[in-house]
Length: 324
Ligand code: MG
Image (tube, rainbow, N blue to C red):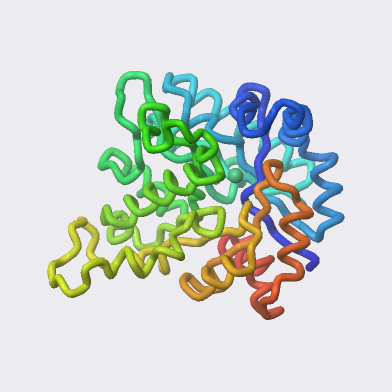
């Protein structure tokens, strides 16, 4: 399929490059770092070869979210966003941008998002899970009360917010002790991100801001498969749910969330997602450079769905969501 738009596509600046070093074994790191630092060369050639018209670019992970010193998080976010704006300006027909945000400081994050959208023309934000801050052991998840002002800004700017994975901290990873292979994309990314998304849904955030739009990668981080069970546990016990939100979790998932195909190129999984959240809320993505563009595109271009759904997922849903 020609004209695809892909939106979980990463790059790095020198200051954040090493955050990605642990995700591939030794020999592959040379290749991965050259992929992360390249925007205008190999990336564009692969986009051309595989029918991707536009990539919406975002910083690698965990990057800004893992910088415990708030001032430095603010500085790196700004530097990464400025660098990305410069690269997008070279090929505005091929590249768009998601803002990196220093959510260690909700007000600074709101101001940076406003700057990126209004001054740099960014189409939304991509944030790598919870934020860390040096003065607290607490993990800063964005359902916490101090983030309601930030979300008001996101709602007012009317741009989507991509909740991208990161690993849990070592002290919170005891469930994986002795099984390091479960960290990262194998399992821990999805668990961490799915719980964060459920916290947002249960918090009442979407009752307060019904127009917020959250994007999850990797075919929804397992949530489509679990959605019925989340709302129907012990259905014979007639008690209201024990969360502050007003509606069923599936209502928020279906009305406030979008998911992408990044790093999860499996027809069976796509079909399940289409049956839960619907083809209007699924968007093509590759997760370059951690996954191969040909693996994503060759699968998507031939997967057994209707051509009408392929056009939506590959292109038109993104055009509508981002107004591009
Ligand atoms: Mg990714």
